[in-house]
Length: 291
Image (cartoon, rainbow, N blue to C red; front, side, top):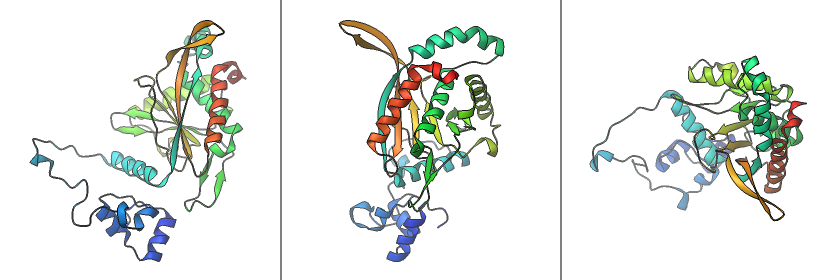
C-alpha cells in the first residue's frame, strides 16, 4: 500500500467503506486513487489481472524497451497524483513585453560588465514574486485533508529546468527580496547545476509557485500541471507579435502568452483573472521591478 498515492482523507474514506486501496488501484491499472475511485461503477476499470497499460505491444509490431529512471518514476507519480487529486483550471492571458525588451537592450552594457545574462525569465521571476505578495492566496498550500489553508510569509520561486535526466525544479529563495541582477545570476547558476545534476536537496522544494518556460522552444499555449503542495503554476510560451489598434492605427506589439493553472479548491476564476491582470501590468512596466 505504501506505493499507492492517495490523500489521507481518501485513505480514511477507504477504511470506512472497507475498500482495499491496493486492490482498487490494481483494478484501475494505476497507482493513484481519488475519493471517486472508491465508489466503483463507471469510474472503475474492469476487474482482473490486467489494467489499461498491461498490453503486449510486441503483438502488433517490433518494439524496444527503455527503463524509466528512478527520478522520472518519482516525477511521474507526483504528476499523476496532481492530476488525480487537484481540480485544476488554466487561465490564459498575455502581456506586452516591449518594455522588457527595451530595458534589456539599455542594460546590455551593464550586463556584460557584470557578467550576468539578464534574460526575460528574470523579469518574470521578479514580477511573480511581487504578484504573490499582492495576492496571498496564491502563496499558500492546503493541508493534506483539504481543510486548512497555510498562508506563507515568504516567496520562493521554482524554476522548471528541462534536463537530459528529466525535469528538475530548483528554487530561488526569497525572490521578493532580490533585485533583477541577483535573480538573473541565480537562474543561470541553478539551471547550469541542474543540467550537471549538481543541485542538492537545499536547492529543491518549498516553492511558493513554479514557473515553467517553453519560450525558447515554441508553442502558443499549454496547460501546465500544478506542482503540489503549491496551488498554482505559471506557464510561459514564445513571444509573438500581435496587432494592437491605437484608434484607427494598427501597431505591432510583442506579447508573451501566459498560462496560469490553479487549484480551484483555493482559487476561483475571478481571483485568477485579477492575479494575471496585475502580473501582466508588472511585465508591461518593468521599471517597477527595479525599485
